[in-house]
Amino acid sequence: MNRFDFTPYRRSTVGFDRLFDLLENNARAQQSENYPPFNIERSGEDQYRITLAVAGFKDDEIEITAQQNLLLVAGNKQAEDHEGKQFLHMGIANRNFERRFELADFVRVENAELADGLLVIDLVREIPEAMRPQTIAINKGDNVTKIADKRNKKEDKAA
Image (cartoon, rainbow, N blue to C red; front, top):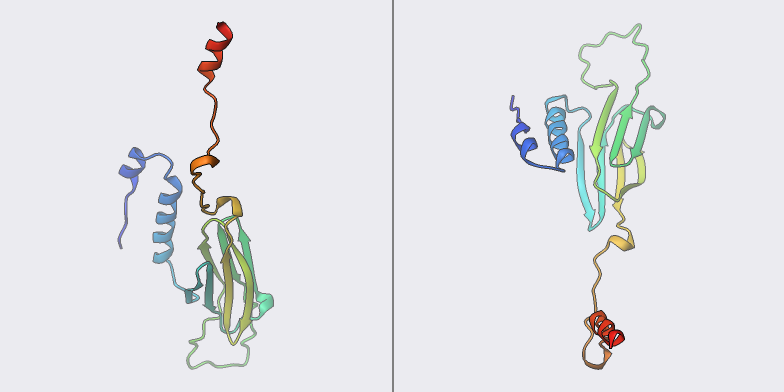
């Protein structure tokens, strides 16, 4: 079991608390069980898709919650009546689960769909116009606006 100690880094950095918390939570989550299995894919420049294998779950047994920078997918399987059944092998996992995904800023859930035992969640990153990079034109020649020097105005008034 690998355990990273970020204490020395926390002492010498300011403002990186969230980063260290994410790293520690991720390491803790990887040590826990990996049910249900999932894929994360990038389907475009600002589009992502999470696919979870949730065989046996109905759409009313799955809850998807998006809040701030966290996507929470929880499955609550209603207890089945196994009375009168004798299983020789029970390999299909029908247990409750909770899977958390940390989302970057400006990422939102666009669509969720359950088909053929796969839950597909489409995400899109929408950066506000004010936050996008802008090209600034450089003025040349006669188009340059000159700013009057405040020091010269004070000297002129004194004279």
